[in-house]
Image (cartoon, helix red, strand yellow):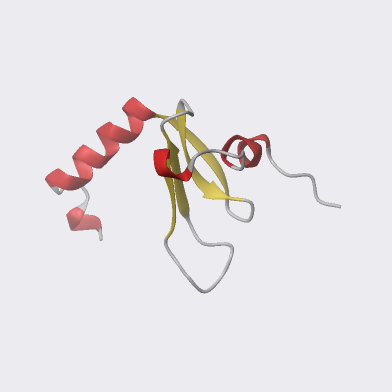
Length: 77
């Protein structure tokens, strides 16, 4: 049996869904990138079991989102 990552348990608790969100960027499979953010968890979790997890502080995530909004990465997409 495959052991689940600690990050999986960090985001898979019985939490009030009105205080957070989980977004998967593909609706056709289980191995697509996702974002998990919740008011009751200190970190934002990016990724999943198949592709791996990346744990960001909320401040780091906010800085990345602000750079995306400014168009910092647009020329590379």
